[in-house]
Length: 211
Image (cartoon, rainbow, N blue to C red; front, top):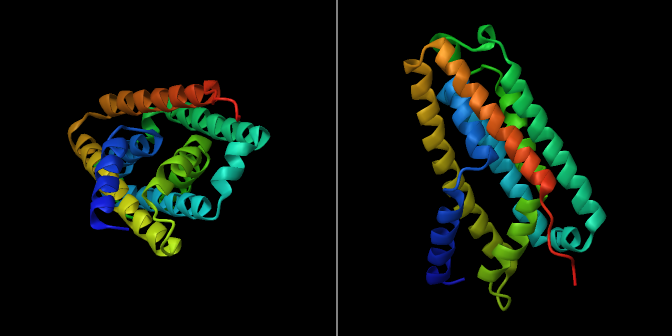
């Protein structure tokens, strides 16, 4: 893989990642509810999911998903149901469940739950695997060893994802320190509504028939 190819990949990936999706929205919400240190656990979960997705593409599992409508539908409905459930939990969370500034900056605040939630949101979206299966191989030179190339692409993706999620988490953490509890509750309810909308859109997604 040449440096020019890597530069093009980074540029295109940065433009795609900049469009807010479920994991970015979770980073913003985690920062606003739990503070920046706790939100970092969510970033770790999303990065682990990215690593597994890229590994799946390198192993050819993305092609299997593209060829199996049944498998695609199962993963799609699991991902959709989880997003809707997660959004509903945010919508119905009472104001008392929202942390104060002191609680939000606790580095151990629900860290395992935050990590797991972000991981499941990222790994359960079949569209992400299909996209990576079509996108990543375009930057891999088939005449050279593929494993180091996929590792390089994965590293670039992880850095870009962390930078993007960090930006939104910092924005969320600032909201935590500046918004009143009632306003913070409205913000988290809005984030929950957006996650539910993303879940519905995922359920409604129809891919082109496999020829």
